[in-house]
Image (tube, rainbow, N blue to C red; front, side, top):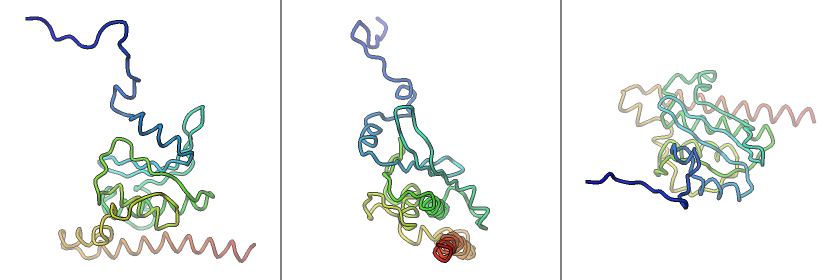
Length: 188
């Protein structure tokens, strides 16, 4: 029996390293780059959710704005950092920071994550859209409000304070945005 042979010969094309490692889908990346918009990059680990506004030029990518779900503790959120309410609040915080930095639009980049409707990735997108960013999307992909507010988690854990904590943190993030906007209007 002979050995199984892989691609060989002078015409064999070695894929890019990040493609071989399964880290980058270059076809999707190229489509995003041709849009000539800043990319709203959403990445999820087992512990946190990260959102970044990334600009691309010929020298590489530059991160312009970042929000991490671990920063929600500063606003009084002490629930899980990778669940649906945390994803929404991270998106809201990201959108607030992007608007303060002068960015109004972007295009969603979820990388190699499977686009599952109603997932935490789309909860983060909903938070960014609710904060005022213009990102092309289909509203059907967003999770329902019961998941976003944490009512399902509260019912499962029998802790009604989770939904209350969500609303308190959401109010802090949005009121801080409105407060800064009011200060700028009175000063200007």
